[in-house]
Length: 268
Ligand SMILES: Cc1cc2nc3c(=O)[nH]c(=O)nc-3n(C[C@H](O)[C@H](O)[C@H](O)COP(=O)(O)O)c2cc1C
Ligand code: SF4
Ligand code: SF4
Image (cartoon, rainbow, N blue to C red; front, side, top):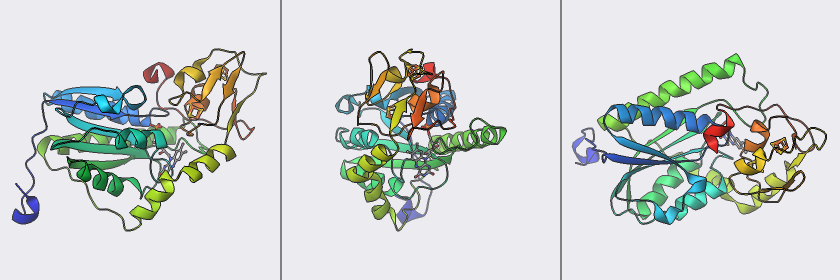
């Protein structure tokens, strides 16, 4: 039924099996995905949460309803997340929904993603951007203020899951500047210069050589020799900095305040 013609709310039936492909650098998106999965499961759906960095996109099962979840980064999302999306198989009428988490504002991703998915023959059924604490240039770490933001974000997640269940979710408005912001957020030169300017390094005095940073890096940018050695593929997801047990990872040669919403095992 077309709501545009009849002015009625779409009555949507998600498939019984829902696969949510997610990436989360520091846990915000994982918490939100967990809440959405919990609510969908309590309504009888069989939901799987699958990490994008461990999934071959060509093996995504388009026979199930698909969810995509990721953090906003530079008005878009991380290049390797976008690569995953670009390499999804043709949808042939598969319902797909998305949600992202962000600190303040995103203009680039929601509209561009919808356009892309329509071309790939998916049916975009819902999009939601959920505010959570910033994990970049954070000044407040895991403060009480951030805990309140998380609680509010999880409430918004629960509401969105309810909308997906009862068919009132929508993909929303596409901002006018969407295309420009999307091009900025997916520009290889922008990411290269960001990665070089804010590069990670290790303080050998502090490092306890546990190798956790190398295991956590979603793009294998860290090789564990005697100490971690950083290559040039960093996508600034903040995992290594946020979970290093001895705060040994430096950004631009300096120690920075870090934020995390979960503990490391949840992301390995
Ligand atoms: C490199 C980088 C760029 C970011 N860019 C944006 C942005 O453009 N807009 C925004 O609102 N938040 C931005 N953020 C904040 C994150 O989107 C936000 O904290 C998100 O919830 C982190 O999710 P995660 O914990 O699942 O990784 C950025 C964070 C990083 C690390
Ligand atoms: S996580 Fe921290 S302490 Fe462990 S190897 Fe990496 S830099 Fe060193
Ligand atoms: S090096 Fe650190 S910040 Fe860069 S992609 Fe790997 S885990 Fe993320």
